[in-house]
Image (tube, rainbow, N blue to C red; front, side):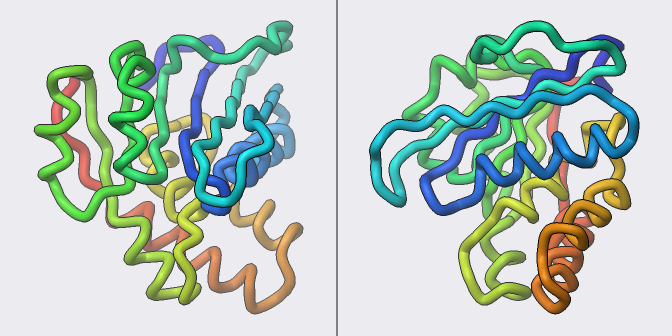
Length: 189
C-alpha cells in the first residue's frame, strides 16, 4: 500500500463517465470517516466525451495545497484510450495505475511508461451488467479501493446510499462490490 501521508489520486475520464463525481464521492467517504479530503475537478468548455481530470487528496492531517497533482500516488484511468493522451502523467505516477480494461493486454501498453503495479478491471462490462449504461465511475471506485487502504467499500456505500435514490443506490452498490472483487493486479511490489 501507500506510505503514510497524503494520498494523491488523479482521475482521468471522458465527460459523462463520472470522473468528477467519483472524486467527490471518495472525498465525502473520507470526510465521513474523520479524514481530511479535497476533490478538485479540471475541465474546460468541452462536451461530453472530451478528456476530464479530477484530483483527490486524502490525509489524516490538514491538506493545505490545492494545486493540480503532478505526480499522483494513484492514477485512475476510466477509458484506456486516455493512456496515450496522458502518457506524460502515466510516466509520473508513483505507485498504482488503475485502468478500465477488458484484459491483461493493457499491461504491454503501459510498461514502457510505468513500472509500478497495474490494477485493471472491466468496469464497462460491470456497469453495463448492473446499470445498463456505460457510466463506469462506481466500478472504478471499486477497483481503486483494492489499493487505497484508507477508505473501505463500506465507507463508499454510505455515500452512495446518501446521494442516490433507492434502486439506483442498490445498483451502484452492486457495481462497487463486483468491481472490488473483479480487480486484477499485475507487477509492482
